[in-house]
Amino acid sequence: MTGNKGLHKKIGTAALAAGAAALLFTGLVLGKAVRPNVLFALGYEVQGVDLSHYQGTVDWARLEEQEVDFAFIKATEGSSYVDERFYENWKAAEGTEIKTGAYHFFSFDSPAETQAQMYIDTVGELSGRLVPVVDVEYYGDKEESPPGREEVAEELGKLLRALEEHYQARPIIYTTYPVWERYIRNGFAGYPLWIRNVYYPPDIDMKGRWVFWQYTDRAVLEGYDGAEKYIDKNVFAGSMEELEERFFIP
Image (cartoon, rainbow, N blue to C red; front, side, top):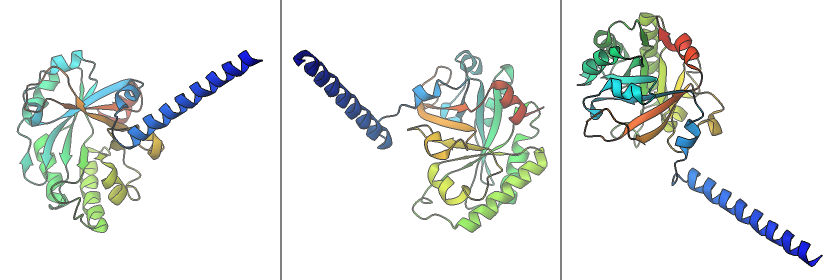
């Protein structure tokens, strides 16, 4: 009997220690001190990146060798800015099997109509590419002094509809949690969502509403030489066949 009591005590102590460790890990994750996303992201079949001029000259063949299935390339911002590496990346990526798309950085300070035209004039046709992406996130002092909900929703809606009408394909919205909560959550349910969460899987609190997930902004790959040593990595919540069927423009 004494031996069994000792065994039970050891089991109980181990269970308490395991529970405490689990709580500590959960606290570190929720407190954003630990980023376990790389492990969670391994469970997704389709992996990709997004990039801009910050990655410098890109060796697209080398990226492809590292199991990059898709890539979103920054094209435009607001009504007048074209990413300085866009055309170079857009052309160079054609020599690979990587599925590529172009994204537009939404400006809170510029009319939707001119933003849409800027993207259309810059990117041109999207045959053989992924559907347009509109990146909606805070910049400058916008988080401290956010624009009004109705004003942003109206302009963003105009931009999305203009791109959808031109390309006959529904654009993807890329966003962060604060912007999603303030501007997008209750008004754009029909648009595919690409969510940024670099600390834990968005299914914890978004219940499968996302289609693409940017799970880290601290990845390091071979094949680029820019001042920025990191590259954003993403996953698609589905198979390659589903990606092509839903988001690839023939």
